[in-house]
Image 1 (spheres, helix red, strand yellow):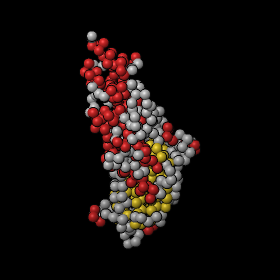
Image 2 (cartoon, one colour):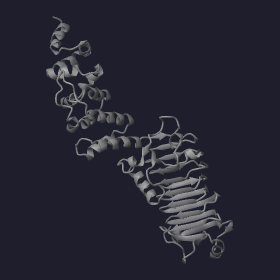
Image 3 (cartoon, helix red, strand yellow):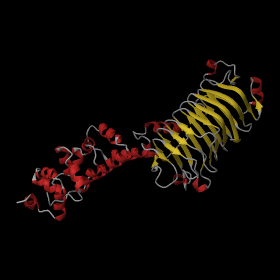
Image 4 (cartoon, one colour):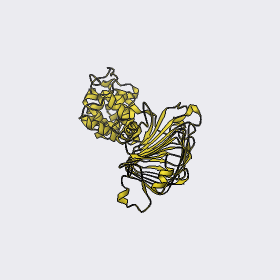
Length: 437
């Protein structure tokens, strides 16, 4: 009797259909022997698995006995999905925990239908994280759960984290940018801690409030393209849209949005790392407000911020502005946690009020609008209850914690370089301490 006849006789007891028998005979002799070396129940289970391919079968035998047993405890669909992914055994075994298999394993003998379980959802997540290169998310969640099965809430956290941990360039083309997320999904996500902390600071400063829309990632590039934000801002209807990056955020050139009332959106740009704004670029909106913020140093060079009512620049470290133009009807705000260095600031559309606040302010080449109320707050506040430091000769140590008019500071075109000039022309200027309204 030939080998084919022998194998046909052996397979007869499994009552296989034509497809299942063809699958068996397509395997190498070594794989056939491995399969027949299993218990009759396992052999039949593998060959009868709906959707199993020859490649899947080979993958199955690369795993250890324990992992193969866990795969066989899945539904056919989930088992094939797991084999299609070709996951490393260490990752697959972490996914197929005992708790995840409960409800899937009562009986897998031929002829019994397997119940649908949460394993499909979990394996779908594993596939998604593998494809995006973010498998570390699952590893960290499982490490924090001490071997227990991931809950639906943890799976939801991982799905959001996968979006936030990826890099994007916002070309405006469909499907190229991140999925929109609600702030309630993002804030508090353990994989976006730095942005969460920055957002809460903005909440404290009343720069954001209520439910907002997040367009976030790890590294975010916004090209000089009028359509870059259109998928997120078109028809925004006054909502707040947050562009966020846990790494680097780059704005490559001019950007305008919200020209129509229906597209009005308060745009909040946040970076936990470096924020890069192309020198000479313009951020403009006829209907909307703007907030730029960073946990790192923030620098703007010849940037124009031309918006409807409020324009805000806020950094959690140093902020440096060089030849920056503000245009806003209601308020222009610049805050730095440490040093605020300004060399060139104009107001093409004077706001009703200007607030500048930092531990130390150093101002040069600034002409404050005579019609605006100006508040300049530093850590130590005014000298003699009213004045800043004047001139370039002030020692650096004496500048710390104060407002310093280094050179060419004026109000309404009138130079303010002495206390006498401040008394005469600075009626709209008030020096205060940080934390004061």
